[in-house]
Image: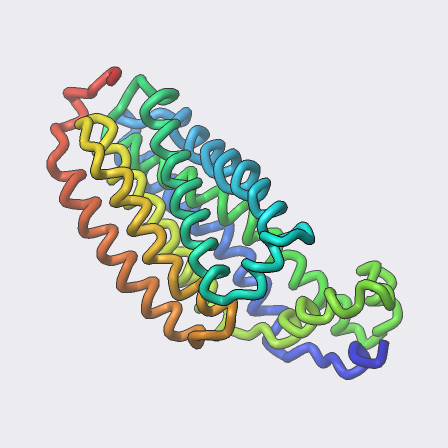
Length: 280
């Protein structure tokens, strides 16, 4: 596996990955601590847990189940989607928007019927966005860190053995090793900024869906789905090499600002949580 012999771990790869791992943990924790301390009387931890569970079930169980058939498995549908850029991008947008926002709507409308405060809606969003960081992205960063540390020792054979990389799996593993080797402070900054945007997005979308539930505004759910799809447009295009990474970050900043602006307006329309709506 000569392609791994030339892997050189950058001087900033390991320290930047360590800082990234720390910040990935700190982001959702700081969001939670700040909001909980500010609104302790108006919030319930159950809403944080509901947000985390809602993401896991909608995005990591149900949505991934559909992905297995439509993207991973070898069939006519997956071959069409993977072989057609427009279909791949559109599929990704629809799946993310529909599953996550409908999941939010179902939990808020049919399960979390008590303590429906606007503060709890924000806490739900923190749980949703926080578990995405801790359960999906953090493990990937830890994996990169482990790869970088193993290859930094200069013993490529031992690194490959430890990571269980064989001739059969080398092609699939090479991109991850290259990404770990090339990771630097610039990538760290982009990952952290992207997570901050994602946390604010999930909070904003939760408030929009919440407003629709407690006020019987049916337009709020399709609005949240549309906004989610628009937010994910450039990331999906980036996966196909259609736009550069910097464009993805600019796009994310714009749509995060739009979502937060709409959510803030709706949040302000709700009465003080001292007049909590116990059920809908």
